[in-house]
Amino acid sequence: DTAVSQTPKYLVTQMGNDKSIKCEQNLGHDTMYWYKQDSKKFLKIMFSYNNKELIINETVPNRFSPKSPDKAHLNLHINSLELGDSAVYFCASSQGPGGAYNSPLHFGNGTRLTVT
Amino acid sequence: AQTVTQSQPEMSVQEAETVTLSCTYDTSESDYYLFWYKQPPSRQMILVIRQEAYKQQNATENRFSVNFQKAAKSFSLKISDSQLGDAAMYFCAYRSPYSGGGADGLTFGKGTHLIIQP
Image 1 (tube, rainbow over the protein chains, first blue to last red):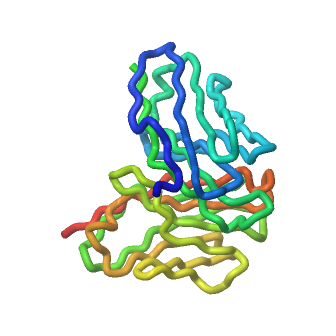
Image 2 (tube, rainbow over the protein chains, first blue to last red; image 1 turned 45 degrees about the horizontal axis):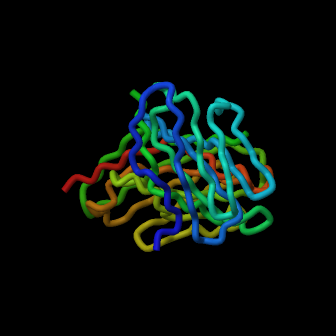
């Protein structure tokens, strides 16, 4: 069974559209994340969320918003898509806070977003 | 804020040989955790090995081992008996136990592309 699953795997859309990427984890983890991997493979955190606290990377445009219907899901909504949003987006989860900080992040397989 | 530096954008090694990927980090914290992740062409992010800063003993996982030098803030990954399946991007990552209740996740280096020559 997939531990962290995200859909869709590929997403091609036009500038100005609004899109969502879904993420679900079945590991019972408390914290979920969204990362962006750019064309140079650099991974940068966008959000972390642990039921009560949302931490936003200050460089993330407010067109991006995470939505968590429950502890096992953290979806990513993107409004007014721009060419520069093209990237691979990874969802991840881990134990914590207050738990094992040596707990690694478990990643989904990524969503390749292409904005044309 | 912590930073992670991987100074080798690309490394190449012959199959069955040993290769070492370097990683340095900058932090003022005394306790933290370090990880190496592998990303093959399939795009999956796979945990290779982890190290707690308070442990002096270097972590090992089969053919993978680390050389952790806390004073030098260095965390290199050694891959022994390289195999074709080891070809991937390798990312070094830092995790602080102090920031936002652990909600800040991992800070990654820019990665090293490892090529295995048959």
